[in-house]
Every structure is written in structure tokens, then in C-alpha cells.
Image (tube, rainbow, N blue to C red; front, side, top):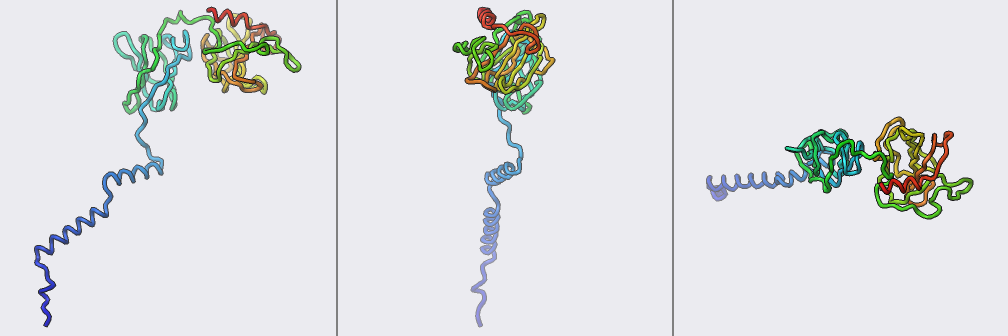
Amino acid sequence: MLRTEFFRFPERTAIVPVAALVVFLAVVALPTASTAAGTAGASAAKSGGLGVPGKPEITDVVCVEQCVSARKATPGATVEVVGRYLNRARHVVFAGKSRDVRVRYRQRKFNRVRVVVPGTAVDGRPFVVSSSGFRSNRAPRELEILPVRMIPREVFPVRGSFNYGSSGAKFGAGRTGYSHQGQDIMASCGTRIVSVRKAKVVYRKYHSAAGNYVVLRNLGTNTQFAYMHLLKPSKLRPGQVVDAGRLIGYVGQTGRAYGCHLHFEYWIGSWQRGGRPINPLPYLRSLQKG
């Protein structure tokens, strides 16, 4: 008769290997913490899940309304903070006389935030705080805060390096079937264009020759200025009143334009409505001296 005792394991030694085997199989079957996190992250990415928002970064701060100049603002002015990951910005922080002043944003996008300068702000380098509590770097350049009375009455329209081009860029230069009615100001595409004087927006349109253009009626005068070949349609609205130095748009070459430039026209009376254009070059040169 066959003895079965040979195949029986001692009770203690039999339990230990079986328990170890169960643990081993469980470990093999379950992913590690890092693998699980990676799998969850990949799954979230595929399904559109939210990730950790980027820390806000600032590359510049520019005054766009009620300004003395691009980096000289006044209390109540609108400034634009430019950078990255700014769509989660909650506050822009300005330097104050005794302590920093937090101001909630007015408009925000991924690459820019608009905010109104508080009355207690002083010269400084603003920074941004996000809704998650992340703090950005300070603006690379200082924003000056000056009294409203310092806003100039007139400024040069192109805020960057420029020249007046060749003879063909001048007022009265010959064109096919007509003569040049303005002065071209040659500058790199993307250079800021601002309102020369306090004015009211008359037109903001597109024309096959003028490209994206804006016409402003200068308040307190019988003159109008036209700004043509803008890179993109201006954000100004007809009927809107703007101060001297207000951003109109950027130098471009839309319409019938060869090379990046601003075509600037100076009209006595209404633009294309019974008025007449005059040579704007002497006036532009006078603004340079100012």
C-alpha cells in the first residue's frame, strides 16, 4: 500500500510559502504608485483633465490709457501686463507709499492682463499673483506714476525707431491716377502706433488700399488724422474719445503697402468728406522736437 505521508508537508512549512505566494501575486498584479500616477496623468491628459497651472511670468508692463508715455502712467490709468500664464491672474500688485497695493484685474488672457492703476501707487515694478497663490517675477522695467497734469497734449505717433523713407514716401509723390495724400513713417512691423492728440474715433475700417485704418477727429480743432496699414484691426471703437498717447494699433503693411510703415494723413476739415489734406511732415518734425 502506498504511503501518502511522503507527499504531506509539515503544517508550518506549508503555510509560509502559500502566504508569500499570495503577497507576491498581489504585488505583481498591482501597479506601483509612480506607475499609477503616470497612468492617471496620461488618462487625465487624454480626457482633458486639468493639470497644475503654470506660474505667471511678466515680460513687460505698458500704459495704454490716460498715459504720459508707454511706461509713464497716472493714477486711474489703464496698464497692460504682458507675459505668460496670466489667464489665472487675480491681482496685480503695485508699489505703494507705505506698502504694496493689490488691485483686481479688469481683463485677462493667457498673455496679458489689464488693470487700473490705484491712486496710492508709486514708481515701481509691478507683479502678478494668481488665483492659486503663485507670484510672478517683478516687471523687468519700472513703471513710473506721474500726476495727470503731466499727460502731454501731443505726441509723435510711432513709438519706436523710424525714418521718413525715400521720395516716394512723401506727401504729393506721384501714384497711378492720383498723388500721395500723406507721409509714410517707416518702422518695423509691430511697432506701437498711438494717438497724436486727444481725439474722437470717426472711422475704424479696412480698405483694399489703406488696409486696416483709423481716422480720428482732434477735439478742439477742425482737423482729422488718418492712420493706415495697421498690422491688425484697431481695438478702438467709433465714437470713443482717446487721449494723446493712447494705443491705436501696430505698424503693419496691410492693404496696398510695400514694406512695414504707417501712412499718416493730416486733414483740414473732414477726412474724405469736403476737407483737404496738407503735408504732415512739418508737423511731425515739430512733434519730434517735443
